[in-house]
Every structure is written in C-alpha cells, then in structure tokens.
Length: 264
Image (cartoon, rainbow, N blue to C red; front, side, top):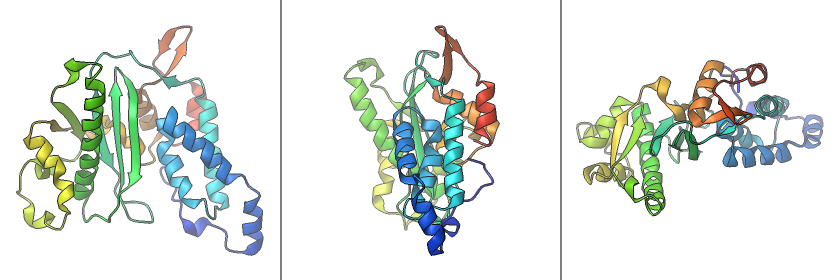
C-alpha cells in the first residue's frame, strides 16, 4: 500500500448506479483469496488485506484499485517464500502498534514470532478500545503478544526443552517498558482495565523480559502500517521472505518486486 493513501467509507459508492456497478466486481472473492495468503505464507500483505477487508459491504473504485495493486505486488514476489535456517537463533518476538491513524481511531496491534530466520506466527488486529496515548496502545499490544509468547513457549517446549527459558519480547516504545515494570505512571493509567496488566505479572514472575528495540529494527512494523519501499524490503527480509535459486538462498528482492511493490 502507498503510505500516503488513506482509505475510508467515503470512498464507497453512494449512487444506485455506482453501487450496482461495483456489485459486479469480484471484490469479496479477491479479499478472501488474499486473506488465505496473508494467514498462510505472506505476512507482508497482512496489513493491506486487513485494511481493505473493512469495505467488503460496500467497496468503492479506490478500494478495488488497491486490491489490484496487492495482486501486482504478489505477482512481482511470486518466487519469494518463507525460508528457515538462514540464521541460527531461538524464538524471536516483536510487538508493535500504529498511531491510531485509521478512520475508526482504534490502534492496530501486531506481533511477530520468528525461529531460525523465518516467521512462524504473526497477527494483527484492531484494538478493542480507543486508547488515550501511543504508550497505552503499545502496552495493550505487548499484553496480547505476551499471551502468544506463553502459548508458543508451552508448544515448542515439548519439542525442544532447552527453549524453556526466560523469553524476550521486543518493543519500540520506551514509555511502555517503564509502565510494564513499575507504577510511576499509575495516575495516568488507572483507567486501564486490570486484565491489561497481565504483562506486569509475567515480568514479575520472570516469564518474559520486555526489551527496547529501535523502530528501524522493528520487524512487526510491517504488520501495522503502510511503509516506504525500502522498509518493506528490509522488513520482508526480516520476516524470512527470500528468493531461493537452484538451492542457493538469495538475500535480495528482485526488480519485479521493486516495480510491482510501489510504496509497500
């Protein structure tokens, strides 16, 4: 998606003739196919698909053009796949949110988990409440990522007992790190439901560590917002999306991706 593009219900048709014309467009089928790919093997299109799926009831021409752009992007990256083993490391964990930039004003949460250089679990969703600050949105996103951490730890720990160690969750908001370990901002956070403080208990029990990660290194950033082309390429490689060629791993995106990807 182009970073400067903004899609809303105002782009939906209002006249009966325009509505009838858009009914003939296979918008729902296209979104259904894209959702399957975003969930299964293409985490890099997850944000675009999530945004465009909000207009299934009454899509407009602008929404349809954006869907076709996603297909062009996939056509340019059809030879790329999630590759494991390019790097050797344990489970890596990232969490991030956007700045509540969409029309509904609810932050978009996203988390990403990687093993040996490839993504194994990812998710993005609209937060269930309107937050009052970026730190609050990141705090809630970190709580949801913590739940996924615990589940993956139990699942993978049965296969690899050596991984049953203290987990590190990367976050790019310093205020969130402070809120998660002490009560310095209690007066500003007292309106938050107690269930969102689950992450504090996990940190206190030494189940996870919440660690700062610079925004440029935040792989989960691709799940929460439209990015510039160079960031899409960078985070795509961070997800483990590579192009294998005759059994040899190629670390760069080809020209087809650069031409078809646009802004991300």
